[in-house]
Image (cartoon, rainbow, N blue to C red; front, side):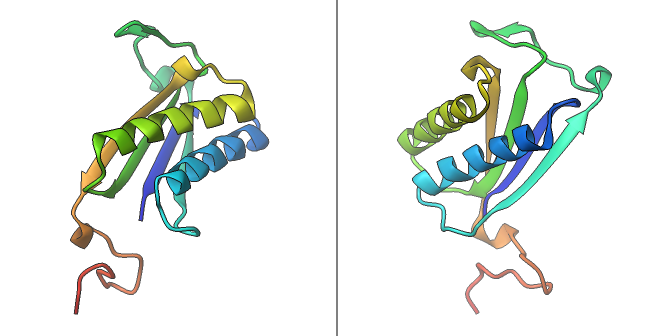
Length: 127
């Protein structure tokens, strides 16, 4: 059910991009997302089309910044979200060496009826 959109500047290897995707997936599993519920889009951008603050709220960002937006069902606690942020940042750092300050995460919560996994059906809506 989560949809993860992962954005970064062009130039990283396929292995690097896959490692980021895997770290995000493992972090989601750790907060209770079902196994095999993996939907990710990794998009590379030209530097001119990837704009961000070099410093914001005491966090320094480099040109290696990765922006991750996860859309998932509403209902998780603040503690679960905080654990997710930490697991994603630490997992990506462990897998790639990317500084944890260069891991930007945004969560979008939606109601269960806002998903269709195919066949024109809202699978989470009771029939």
